[in-house]
Structures are given as C-alpha cells and as structure tokens.
Image 1 (cartoon, one colour):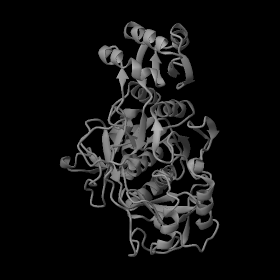
Image 2 (cartoon, one colour):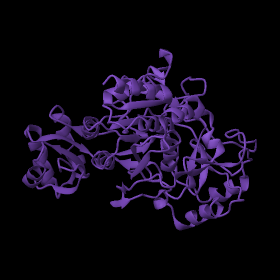
Image 3 (tube, one colour):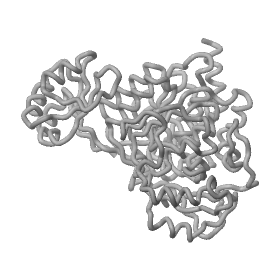
Image 4 (cartoon, one colour):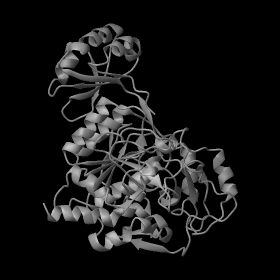
Length: 462
C-alpha cells in the first residue's frame, strides 16, 4: 500500500517539510503540456525516464540537496508544475499481509475445486481443463450464454501485473507484445524473472508439460492459491509441498498468469497485453504503474486491468486514468482484500470500475472491501479455477480475480463496431444481477450477457 507523500499548490507546508525526504528519492513530476524539458533544465533535474509519450510526466531525481531546495521553493508558485510526489511502492492485493482473502489451503482431504471429467477440452482453439471451462463462476455470470450470442470478443486488454507464462497451453496465441517496466524490455514479460534457476528447474520438472503423469499439487501461498494436479479431484501431495517449502516461492508468483487466465475465460477472443510493473513478491513502484497506463493507451489497449490497490490517491495516477478515459479506454481495478469499509485506489478514482468479490450466493466475500463511493460492481472471487505457470492450474481467491472477470466482460463489448465511451460501459456494467445495498458493492453483480445486451441496446439507439 502507498502512504504517498504528495505535493501540490495546496500542500505547501507538507512540501517544504519534506525536502530532506524528497532529496533521497526519485519523484514523479507532472508539468504543463510541452514544458517538461524547460522545467528539468531550469532546476537542474535529472530525468530518469519519461512516463508518458509527451514527456509531461517524468520520473526525476536531484543531483544534490541544493537543487532539491531550489526546485521545492519554485514548485510552489510555478504555473508549469502541476504536481510532485515521491515514487512510492505498492502491493498486489493478494500479496498484502493485511489481506484477509480466504485461506485456500486444502489439507489431506479431497480437493473440492473441480468436479467432473478429467478430460481436456478445446476452448476457442486452445487446450483447457474441463473444470476451468465449466467452473461454477463462469455459469453464474453467464459466460457460455454470452459466447453463444456475442462470440468471443475482439479487444486488447492490458494487464498491469507480474508477467505471464506465454507457453501455457491455455494461453497460446493470446498475448500481444507488452513491456517489462522493471527491466525496460519490450515483448512478453515472463513470470519467472525473479526466480532463481534451481526453483525454475524444480517447477519445470513437475510441470505437466514436462511430465504429463506427474502429480504436482502444492501450496503456493496459503492466503492466495493452491495448485491443482492433473486429475480433477485430487489429494494434496504433502511430499511436493515439503519439497517446495525449502524453496519458498514469492507471494505473488503466478499472479499475472492467473489474472490472464480469467480474462481469457470470459473473452477468449481478446488479446492480452502483459505489462510487468510488479515483482514476484507483489511489490511495485507507482512510476511503473503510471508508465504502464500511458503505454497501454498509446499502444492500442481497449481495457486496462489493474488488480492492485493502494490506500492513498496520487495526482499522477489520477491523471493517467483520466488520459485513458478520454481515449475511450476502460479501466478496471480491484477493491482490495482487507474486508473493510474503505476506499482504495485506483478503484475509487471516478471513471474506474472498482470491483469487489462475491460468493456463489451473491453475498459479499468476507475479504472484500466495500462501500467505495465511486463507480463499482462485483464479480465472483472465491475458488476460481485459472491458469498457473508451467502449464498448471490454480484455485484463486481475491478481488484481483474478480477484477479479471469484469475486464474480460468489458473486452467482450468491443471494439467490433466502435469503441464505447466510458459512460456507456459504466451504465451497462450496472445492468447485472441486482445486489442488496447492504452488501456495499454497487448496484449489481457482473452478468456478462446482461452487460452485452445493455451495450447492444445503447448501440442500437446511437
């Protein structure tokens, strides 16, 4: 979470008292259009990198405390400087130690997550487990009905996350080139960037791709996911758990692949643009998130999935969201997993679809935050089956995964005929299954067919 130290014309006292703190950090600088170079040169700032295409949003540093002091005094009155804030760290929701996501650990009893045939099926051209395709959440939000009437979607969804497993059989040919903001590398960023080679080798040995007969269930993070083996009803293999205990996986490893799998579940015809802004332990910097939003908009994304949250707003983040909305890019963000009545960002920013989690009975999940006053909805977020690195599948709990379902639904809505405006998407997303006001999750739970019907009605009257 971000305890952001933010500075604007209306926070002069805070700004001046923070000079010593600012001097030790890179800061995100927003300036009036076209004045980035002027401001940097005038105050001796070092531009670490531009965060938008125009150079009006920059990550900058200061060569010495004197230049920081000069800049601080000037920023208060300069009409060219819009905001300055420390580049702070944030967390993926499910990696947050304060998360109260349901414990997905299943001991030596039978795994209840998947029932039915162990056979593999063809899912819009890719190989998938039948339990993934036919999972209760997909039926609940009417994914099959939506596909029957509206097809499989054709949008580009940018997913700001930990990277992906581009070789997972479920996700073959789904990804378009994205960017790794942690390394400055274009392409499809892998989940395994933060793992040492011994851990990668171990996971590779027990993956179905390497050994189709292997039983490979293990607990990745007891508050987040439980990996399932290749049979549809399985016992947890305690020896595998013990083997991996000595090589503890980072708390958010696999998160990006899991989110991608759920986007694909709802919109199998959509393409996913992976944007890596988070390490495998779930940590990431605000500057990389802001950079990723501008990148997504400028490189053809129609939807931006943001399965992360913070407790404080940021001028740079809000400005990036506004840029996306003005370009008809829909932003979808997680409500957070503290189980509290609270606002988190970017979900609480006006124009963003904030997503809480519900169970199969359409009641708020105990871990889901609620009562954010901005645009919001809800979607199933418990015991979801999704892809996991090394050709595996996992069970997932958390608002991150509810968010992925909503992003998939939005991706189903365009851009076949024309890009929808943000107000149209926000209106249509509220046409789902009504939720009682006491749940605090917005007017309705996601219903993909109802959402698409509402968009279609708007289009027919346009």
